[in-house]
Image 1 (cartoon, rainbow, N blue to C red):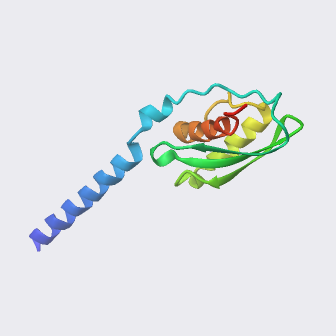
Image 2: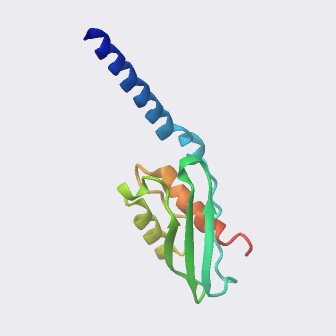
Amino acid sequence: MKKKLLIIGAIVLVILAVFFFYVTNGLSEGAKVPLSGIDLSTVPDGGYIGVFEFKRWSNTVIVHIQNHRISAISIVEDVPGARITNCSDEIFRRVIKAQNTTVDAVSGATVTSKAYLKAIENAFNPY
């Protein structure tokens, strides 16, 4: 019985270690993702697809432009687990209000915030 408990304990420890590695892998690099802001003055009306790929923070968004202004942002492919924090709603609200990606990250979700912001910027790479 003692041996079974030790084996189960070891298995649980390994699972926790793998989960911890998955959750924390890339945090410091992700927090340093540079943001340059966007200039919408020459962007025609339409929907622009932006993609950001970095470890578990990869995502795809569509940024909707009307009269050189961001009117809406929708998620095509979300950051895994991001819905738990509602980070996207807050970041998108901030971007639409500022009409730029130079906004503060959501507290406690810095890398997720930057992943969305970079995807939004990437939607306008050709402009």
